[in-house]
Image 1 (cartoon, helix red, strand yellow):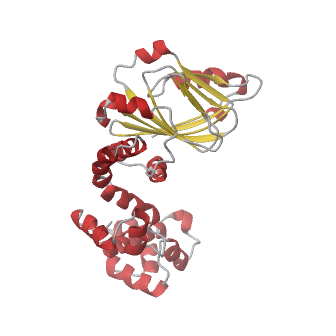
Image 2 (cartoon, helix red, strand yellow; image 1 turned 90 degrees about the vertical axis):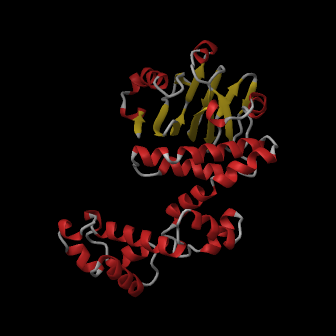
Image 3 (cartoon, one colour; image 1 turned 135 degrees about the vertical axis):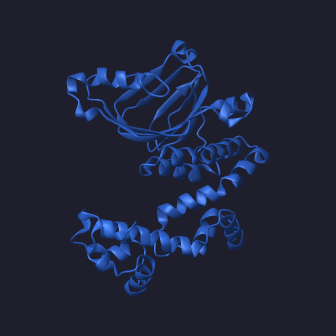
Length: 318
């Protein structure tokens, strides 16, 4: 995971530093302030999931461009999909998207490109080799530089990409394991947006288990988390939900309880929580009843939460 914050630089040097940073991106481009009379803003984070690149950028008074000659140097054609929270102009091959309320736009690394954000905006981008998608060139050409965020899978894919960007540090193997499900979901999004229901059906089904587990990890501390809530969120029956989890050897109730206890145990030993009560930590970990939390904690860790907090780290054995 890498971070870059232009506000740390001297104002007089920001334009040059921004251009240098843009040329070092996974898909290199050039950049400058959209209005040279105002300060440019650019705060950037990127991380890799195998060969998949995910970025999160806060930018303003920004103009980026990729010339045709620079694009031709790209050895492996890639698709970039950018999700923006506000007005972000994307232009390529005489196609233009500049919606004022945010959009989800795919485009290619092989074509000349212009990007512009006059006012502060937040953007998430996903970059993947076209060969990984395995979709026909003519099909992809038709969906490029179109807002596909309003397609049926648009909201789901937005959540998935923002979740990826916000995950804690992962090992290389853990990160790489998320690449194939993400590519499958992207393939489903593109084919659904392009109107090909047959092409979209298989990858959407194949990634369901991964998407369920990502949603669970994000919302496990919600006291109302249940099979009913999960099934409703993904538009499936509870019976099918349990079948998907069973294929991954996951028992829903046991997984939720174990994950909440793990988070509580970690929070109890965090020095930053020294003044936070055990009851408060139980609540923030997803337990609405303190007594049931205490019983479950003792059964799992062999002592009360209060005693766990007092133990020397070497005595905890985890």
